[in-house]
Length: 404
Image (tube, rainbow, N blue to C red):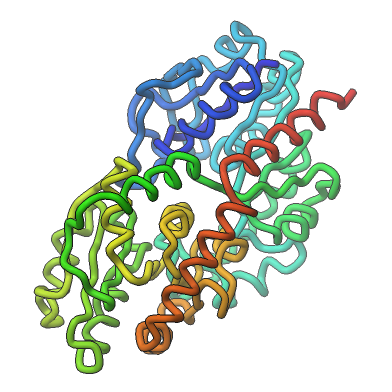
């Protein structure tokens, strides 16, 4: 079977997933990505093609007439590879299928089955677009609640209407959140064409790294009140919220500390914010760490993983190292991973007082920290891991390949 993925980037974690699929199934995989940094790629996303077991083709992007990026020479590349299945990131590429019907017709002439891949956490249920936009569920481009305007609503309604036209074009949909059945289904997609697959890094590698880390010497002094955050340093990760919570909790937990793992455009402003809040000595910025063992050493020597804003896979990473999780609205995937009162807690989105409250709750009970961490590890080993993800992809591929 030949499968082609069209994506705005090749994150290092997804390369590992594709390698596992190739090794476990024998599928021939082609990844098409932008030749330069993708116009739809977030800041500080780490990409890598080293040791890939699949073919990577980089195509030049251009801005279509409606202002969003698409690929030059995509059709000739597909005709040369002759895929049985084409998996395309819904945003922004599916817009082109609706706004250039001739291209869609030519795409269908290749004979490839079309799969849309997305995380529709910021989509409205069709028919409730206005209600969703003006609620606190809708987040702006920085994934924060913001003042809603009628102009913004019109643009959001148009985007939703275009989804109503283009989402049914796919033969199947891969989504990471259970709400996809209701959300994607409301746009005219049959339920049997909607598949929910939990997102996951290479948990085999991470669990192996965990066993290695346990045998190594520590790189940080022991501290039962150490928090850790892993991710790109961008606004929507809300690391500033965690720093402020550290300030609020310092009187009760004098040893409290935050380790921040990651690079990004907000690094200097976050350092300045820690200084402003008087907790610069309690916030440790260690830069980007991508090696599983080195990352695992920081996670293993921390008490609680905290995600202040948007994110997803960093939760999986932390759970592989038996960490309890504190988060709010991430990207929807957190709902499958974090079970309130079992392996972590949720706080109200953007509310530092509520974040401080749940951190206080968990840090005050070391036994709870340990028990929650073990439950996180159990969820990874038994429910959400690289093997369940690969089985999910295989199920979708087998479904579409049988379609007439």
